[in-house]
Image 1 (cartoon, rainbow, N blue to C red):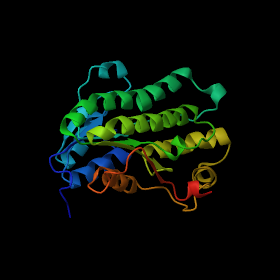
Image 2: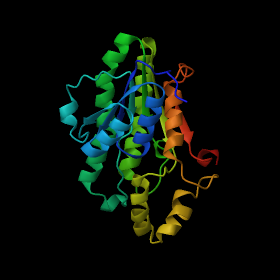
Image 3: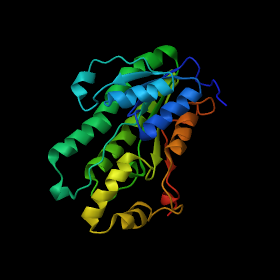
Image 4: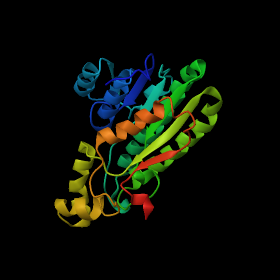
Length: 250
């Protein structure tokens, strides 16, 4: 049954056309938010926007210069868009590294920068940054992704400190491996760099550190995102909330 805890609020979800972003869009809409589905894939953004009675924003977040002067009317901002490249450092294409930093740290900074004036004017705002277990620890062969997620943690904390006096909270959500196309693509890359089969990747790489031996579902991530935007999370700010199946209990 739908509630109205976010009635009258405008939520922007990046990478909203699929995976975690689409799950977040659905969950926020179920709480009454008007959801803007931001994605570079026009058809995917439109499909999810139509499903949640929201709107599509077709945007290439890799083109960060185009975001410099942006003003964003968002009460809730979910920075979710991301990509992954798996390579040893010495084989890592410098342009892939730069692209991941643009998409996963420059773009979130610019979107936060664009949204804060509106949030401040209303005395309320929620920034949720989809980080990762790799925002808190490292794994080999993911130098660009780990670097960007660690930087995102810092951005989120500074946003929390500056936003507190204005009714704005900022938090990171840190899942382990989520059942998405991004992870499925990564399995083949991991198999190559580790020299093992794809089936072994799931058991020996993806789930090896977890006590709960399964992938996180996108809807589980979305439920935490929604809680962080809700009426009982006003004191939750500057935090990193793990959904890692016990990874950090070790």
